[in-house]
Length: 98
Figure 1 (cartoon, one colour):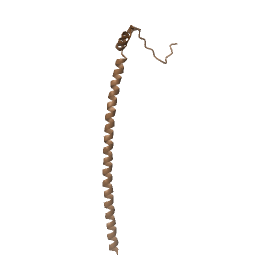
Figure 2 (cartoon, rainbow, N blue to C red):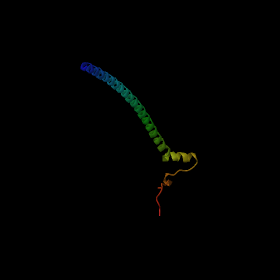
Figure 3 (cartoon, rainbow, N blue to C red):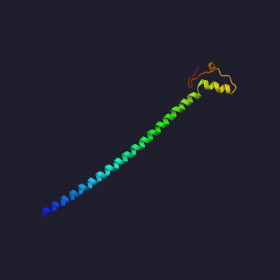
């Protein structure tokens, strides 16, 4: 009787070991796949961010070119106005002159 219980226990322990090993291996594969998928998405987003940042930099440069004094002179001349750089005044908003 004792020998039969021991064999049953060994068989159950072996089945439990095999079952948990299979679950562990499948879980490891699933997590590795999930990590790889997440890394691919991160790389795609980083590429998109880099492209958008370069686009923003190009737009900033274009904005600076459009707001330059030489550009203002060209627009003024094209419109029939006289542009004198000395007559341009800069003001600071929010300050009281009193």
